[in-house]
Image (cartoon, rainbow, N blue to C red):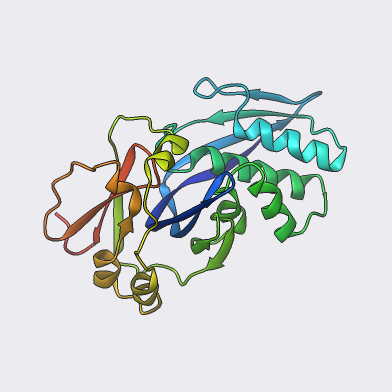
Length: 245
């Protein structure tokens, strides 16, 4: 049996632009949040099987396997048990992380020979967070609909966070429908702060447009900053390691 880690993601910056087709244009800084992970337990089987109590049968992992089967004409005879730790509809990208992990696994294990860029494009057909997870970057700047990925310098060692849950499950589609204005917020300052490894400036420039329609009720102190993650019912409290109490 092989066990694969599927980390959550946090948005350090998220600005929402105009809607084109089914998606809004966005500019976002995304980080892997390895303090919270799902796990795929995978073993060879006589046929494809998927098990997970917390998610429906027609989930993103199954969709990813089905899509890869359609594109390659191959059957993937594995039993997959998903150990779900990332809450559904939390804005933490758990389903996308799970689906991205199975695409990467099958491409390598089955010697499919799909290029990195092509695999990211396949992932984008399932969801716009998948290219980030497939990219392998710890921190990235994502643009267009979120599928265009540029690697960023790793965060400073004293940059830290804790993940919290509001208990609310929030539909990404419904959250986007509440957005009525095109963002005027620029990512320039946080990108410069990341490049300079300036933790204080990173904390000062955290931003998420969804907070204008999904209020976050958390009393931050002077040494920390709370920020909604994505469009969902989770948020993170960011701080410097040596100042947080």
